[in-house]
Image (tube, rainbow, N blue to C red):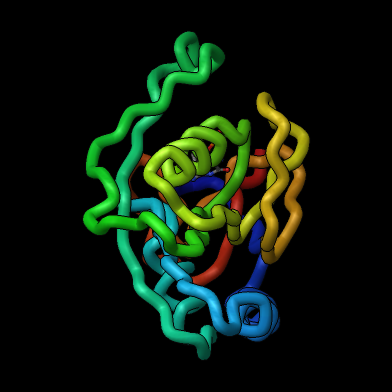
Length: 174
Ligand code: 5GP
Ligand code: MG
């Protein structure tokens, strides 16, 4: 990968601008509600950190880690809880934050999980919406950018455990 040319798809400035807009929108929508931001690790840690600093209503923040099985089993929709939600979210308006919705299996699983724990409402907020690869019908309530079917890296998204710290979104040219 290292000798390939990189292609910056979304710059740091573009990300910051969209997050500011989303933060304003979320702050309006959650006025008077009991917002609980549920951030999915590890991919969304940077996005969450930037997003919550643009939210002006009282906000609780918790983290959860899931894993999905290999390709074969992924198609069966198997998602695993590695670390569960650390708080009682019953009665909270839960906003699930993730880096990307791809097949949608992870988000679909976490939405149902939060509902089963008695959340008053459950909405979803992602940085990237990769619509072409969806396997379950789910569309994020909030997202920053729609992207085509490319494997992207940076701003929290990894390749082989690296590149999460790169401040923009990129892919490698073929
Ligand atoms: P799902 O297929 O369940 O919607 O997405 C599950 C996870 O796959 C995402 O949270 C993300 O960690 C990973 N993923 C999906 N598409 C990409 C991508 O283009 N780049 C990277 N780095 N991870 C991705
Ligand atoms: Mg992820």
